[in-house]
Length: 288
Image (cartoon, rainbow, N blue to C red):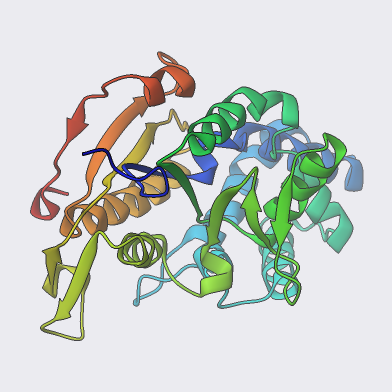
């Protein structure tokens, strides 16, 4: 007996950043160039360590594990407040005060153009277009990056849907997109909610604290896998921030009985990964 073509059999969940991957080095260089233009006395060897300190302020966690950047990504603070705090950090460390538009231009320098991500996006759209298959995008990013992405989609005539009230992207090429800053959830909370909505798990809360204390009863019908990319991030602060978020997401997926595919960008195109019998890892939360 064959399944109806309307019944999902394969679901893949992937971070939008694995497809539309920012280049942090370009962002750093743009900030350095902008600062040098503002203060001609400053040279690269003066700027680099102090600029790193300024950007580290945005990622520094408080006693509750929150940071300015992550608060921006989960919608706890507005874009304007984030920009103001970032400009203040640059001024404190370098003595240079950037204008809001100067900050945004430097920040967006790390956002990729369509040429950079078109093959990965096309592979994801093709997978999603097949009967009984679904690609779900989750994004732990911010409105500045998403504004740039929307412009790239518009310039290249890519289809997308937006929320009429917020103006935020909700679909790209027919694929559902969930944003942490719109849902006011962490990436781990967001993937858990997405999995539940797909009908893969039923939650029976036993405590009001953490994901690890939530009992998940699997009622899975489709094969749901989370795709985790392996990225080379040279900046230690960024690498640590990425690793912490990634570990929490893998743990949340595992608690929901969803396994993880490890994807090495440099060794395998996304299209090949999606068309292959990928090696799957079942990661125990206690090991992360």
